[in-house]
Length: 162
Length: 387
Image (cartoon, rainbow over all chains, first blue to last red; front, side, top):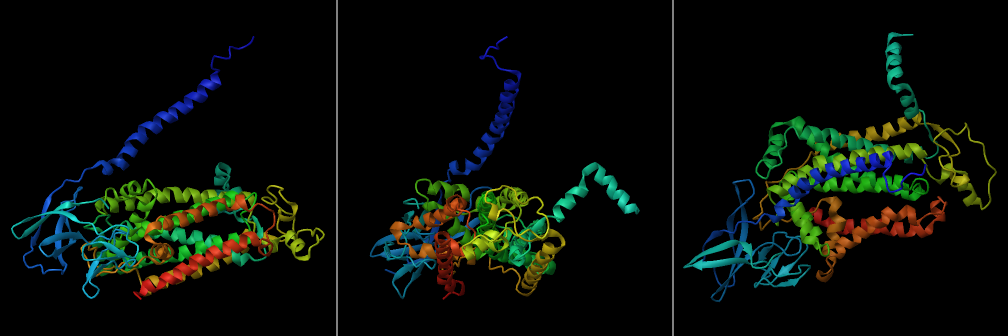
């Protein structure tokens, strides 16, 4: 007797059933795990104002380093100190992170060169933060800032993403 | 029959352990050049050294940006034996990278990756890459200055992947910046994720080796003499009947089975053991005499620290230094292309010829590639000493 080809055989049913079971387990495990791995990416960092300090003593055209305590966020209550360069140009202030835009190494001001230098791959920035030599593809990142009297505050965010 | 034999028999009846041991130990392996064929077992021994010392290091190490460095500093200050264990972990990792590279070069040279052993090579390339990932992720964990800046730079490299770069960076870092989640993730990758792939892959690599038999190199085959003399030498009967696994697949009669073989145990195991024990002694001496360094705790606010790449990262770092700013993704594309070429090698170089001197189309570019990596390393090596 010819079998109805539209009907599943017992073997085909078991074959598909085994795969269905595997798919269910994969999905039930996979969705929370993938979500777990991705979740920090959707965690919006809380924007806070941080006090840098009194900048009345910052000399003209001499980038000055301040250390600012940033909240680490996530689960830890401890903070991390980051370097902030304050540059006074005439009566304007520029507030730089010392994060190189090439590989994020710690940039330092070289007064002998009159430039910011990255020790990793020799990136150079001028006093306005413009990338003028070596591999950095962008200018030095600047913090969003405001000045109350002579006290400088920054946000824990850059004016442009790096 | 002794009592021990009776116990052995009891187990054999229930587990077939006797035939397993016999199969494992008395396999035929190529006789000539056997010293060159010790590199694989040396790699395995060094990886096992990593496993053992790594397991014990978790007895003290805490994966935390506040406690991680302190836990290793405690080890350094108060635990001489623990410091030796950490020293063994570090120095055997360094030597492992070197030995696995030699193992790969030897295999490349002898053309052992050809049919039917393509997947031995592919799994081997996979193992090489996983060992590199282990080395890089391991370098993050001490959370001293060197570790922190390595973490910053290394997690930033994939940011230059076209289109999805910053996504990959954020995925590894667990955010935009290196922080607590970066260390937790990297610890998980180093201790669980990669080993969970690495060790089964080692088993697959060894199972494939056993399935096809150890190839050796062209000096072990009649084909070698054909190539040298330009004429076929008459078939020489092997010293002893060829046993499984030779010939596994009759691809080419000349390269199917080595001319002379001997038992894996105790002949090859003795040579393997000697090479490995020398390496283990060297690792131990380095661990005691030099140990594993621990710089001051990570200081993201530094403007005086000069980050220096791990020595195995030098070729890539030198590429980062050399490519101009418009072409930074090249520093990623060049190594990625190299990896793809490595994986594709057995499917590109498919002729039966194994003699390296008869395969210039593969040996010459391969030689240049090795030279390129060595030159980049040498160019960058001045940085290790802050030159």
